[in-house]
Length: 180
Length: 167
Image 1 (spheres, rainbow over the protein chains, first blue to last red):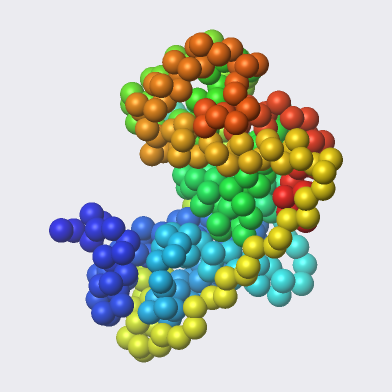
Image 2 (tube, chains in turn green, yellow; image 1 turned 30 degrees about the horizontal axis):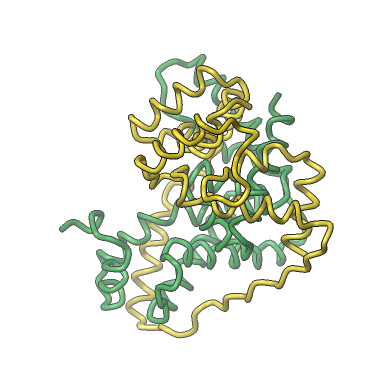
């Protein structure tokens, strides 16, 4: 069975035994979502990258204590969220959301005009997302970009599933106004 | 919002992100053909989907190297603390709004609006919806839509509801 075909529980068991390939697979599978959380909290690509790495280091160190009460993904995202919030508190001043962070998000297209439009839309969405309160920002971005359920988002943000859903609705409602 | 939104609204995020299975996507698109509100939401979600935070080049390799190093050190100790949920401070005037939130919670896993939707149940729910117009949804049954309830609340009420849920 390939590492990618394995479920997280099997990968965790192998990673606990020190198997490097299992660690690699866990990182490959989850680093994008952890980065998304960190970026939405910090609004800075470099800080988010550092926080993502720190989160994985903490997670690997704590892997022996992972009990599986929550899914591995939720657990990792929670560590990422706490790490990013901690990094945010240490930051002395709030930096503006770097637009260049958006450049890597565009879908590949041979049509330059469509790419330019898509870039503009991505930038507008990026800026609009950055204006939302953190919980709404996370509720929308994790639902849309990472496919998390409202229940998972609630677990991650230490709120109920209902709260996560309300935050998502409020976020979409504000984005609709901002992106008109 | 037209009848049927309750079965498709949550799938719009997955459709916008290109995650929806073909048959489910086809059913959502059928609904979109008749629902301007959901088309508008899909337009917003499609724009938002283009703003995914993409890790910088090389980050994955950096993390892999750090993870291997940590694993080799054999350090394994404390797990991150998980904060307990804060108790809610419910007030009588908030009960109708709380009910809406509770109904919203019933939604997940019941109506098949998340990725792991149960098509058979969805078909049953759609059949029931056809029998009962939108305004006549049973108040305490399992087939109560969370998103439509929330969608019909004003922004002010949604914010007030959130204050009650997250004191």
